[in-house]
Image (cartoon, rainbow, N blue to C red; front, side, top):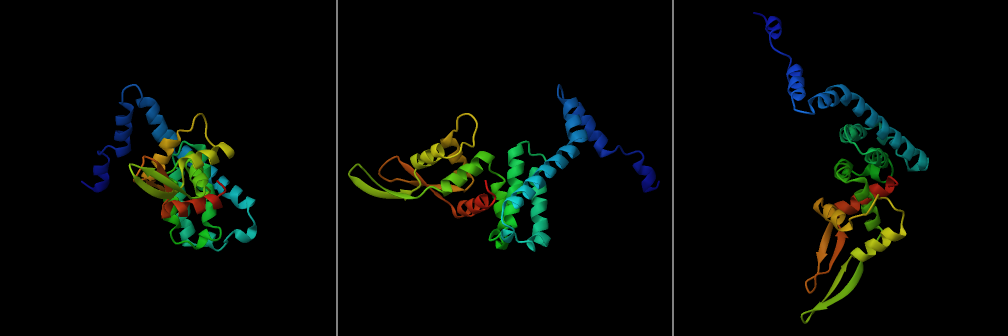
Length: 226
């Protein structure tokens, strides 16, 4: 029996997959429609939104800051592909726009000459829009030295203090809805190697500093206008 005749009797894998999804109790029908009927249109709409944000950012900056040659490079193609992967099924519209604007930043001086831009893009895309803007705020807060003492010991600790971050947030533009759980957001940034703690030896106080990756990422966030 030829291969073509054999294939006639083998069920299509997509048919089996759709049947399995549809058989899921209570949610099978809607989930089937989402995965197999709406997925392509969602991907296309998200990519269109990201490209629109990219174009809007380039319209906002001086032409001299744009590296036009980069947008014709193989690296640009790799960056666009990464953007397409990151926004494909992203539900947060603001994050989709942020990623588009970050790609625009990749094609601007001095970021266009940075060989690590794909790694930085991948890192920033893991952050929520609130965390991206919090990173920008933290990057603008000055390090301060603070003398600490306790149990007969003394220490001078230098870093970015939570109270100074809070002060910067209160005086700046509000970029979050509801109450901002700053402790949780800082912990997430720390877990993603964006900031690190500078713990005190003689007290329970903690300061922060940007990691090298965090400082590098903040430069892209600034260039993207976020």
